[in-house]
Amino acid sequence: MQQLADQVVSASTDFLPLNGTDYVEFYVGNARQAAYYYRAAFGMKLVAYRGPETGTRDRASYLVQQDKIRFVLTTALSPDGEIADHVKLHGDGVHEIALWVDDAASAYRETTKRGARGVLEPTVHKDEHGEVRISAIAAYGDTLHGFIERKNYRGVFLPGFRAVDGDDPVSRPVGLKYIDHMVGNVGWGQMNAWVGFYRDVMGFQLYQHFDDKDISTEYSALMSKVMSNGNGRVKFPINEPATGKRKSQIEEYLEFYHGPGVQHIAMATDDIIGTVSKLRAQGIEFLRVPTTYYDDLVERCGKIDEPVDQLADLGILVDRDDEGYMLQIFTKPVEDRPTLFYEVIQRKGSRSFGKGNFKALFEAIEREQGLRGNL
Image (cartoon, rainbow, N blue to C red; front, side, top):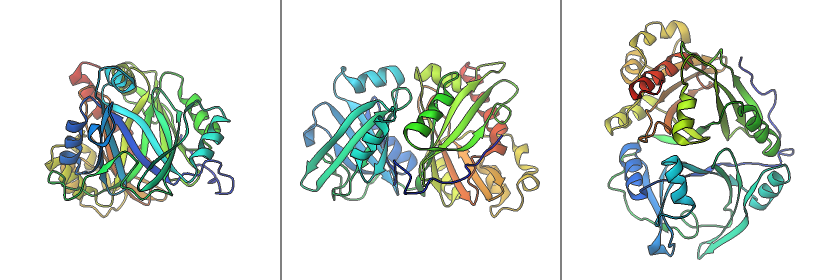
């Protein structure tokens, strides 16, 4: 069953107004090499750096960016401490989803008084370009939500980072625009608890709901609820496993990530055919569905602007709701552990998440699981 929220929280009643996603920070084993991968494969540009050369002794961080998408890739410079422990347990993965706010102190106060576990009290960071106020709370697993207030800052990113000037000789942009949504995987029976967290602690609303009748194959199933903030700029689907004949993709993720975490990040484009064509040429591998998926595509989804033969060649999926249609495709995992992957999405009116594609998509994921011996 699918449910759309009946109303959007007005700005006057939204106790946690969000301007959008500020950045996503990954803890990785080798940030220099990870940054090269995101530049060469996803077309992101190296924008800023933080490390021993800029006065930071325990870590190195590379900021890569494409349009409004900012990823920070951070590695530990010693075998001890939070970063090294995170990578040892989880492999490379998302540590922080940083949210852009106008008042980091208010965001921290309003969420912690509603039950959030505070991780970083409001702290001011300064340099010659001004100041940034940052606070953070704990989310599922070892994931954090940072609150970033940067209205009094004119620097490239954050104090402590040095701008990397000039053209990036590695980067070949592919047309990615912004983060559409980020999906979290949680354990058995934990979805509703985290739905309650986003509702009660962060003021989000239930946007859509998919149960095991919507998301199931012959072998496995999962359940998902999509939470959205008041203005709809931040959406967090939350997945949990459901009972099936074999191991679901959520169970595989939890086993290899060793706990809850960010499963995939959906990045929006205005030209999915052009974007996916460039990503494929730059080495990104995508999941494929059987070619029979496209035989009755127009009958299932109605008239679309894109040539069906090009969609079939690239493996792009299409789904329609009562507001329009959307196009989407999913990469294979980008780590050796079968954990994090990416979605490329283009919305042409539709605000949904591809319910009509779930069966074909998850069967494709199961084929990959089978090759890994994890189904």
